[in-house]
Every structure is written in structure tokens, then in C-alpha cells.
Length: 82
Image (cartoon, rainbow, N blue to C red; front, side):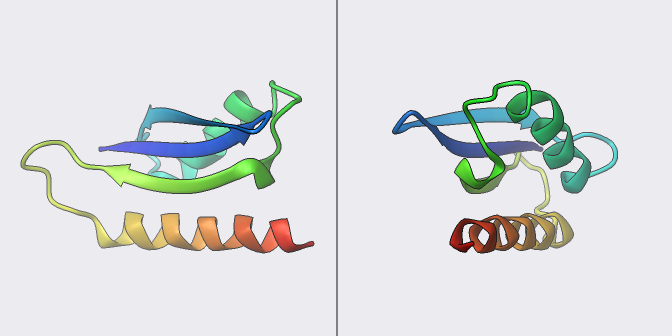
């Protein structure tokens, strides 16, 4: 299972695909924010436009991971409104 994060930098859409860590989706998103975005000062958390879970062939979908991803994306979109 991988996490696909879509974000914008300088009016260009970028994607990062990261493996989901043992701690789950929340830990993977946190890890990406700490080491993927924060190190690059040009990108802010509010630049994230979409979060998707990519399942491997034959892997069963996880409703918990999908719910967490959906909630995090809603929080990010709420941040954009401020």
C-alpha cells in the first residue's frame, strides 16, 4: 500500500508516492510533511491538493486508512480557507 500526495509548487502540480509506514497513513503523512515539504520552503501544507491510497495487486482496501486520508484532506482544505 502506498500513499500518493498531490501538491502544487510554483503553479505546477507535483506528485509524491511514499510507502505507508508501519504506523499507518497518519504516520506516513506526518513523515512526508516533516521531511518532504517542510525542508522545501517553497511548499506549504496548504499546497496539498489531494491524497490517495494506492493498493498493490490483490491487496484488500482498508476503510480505516481511507477515512484517515479523507479527514486529513478535509483539514488541509479547511486550512486553505483561512
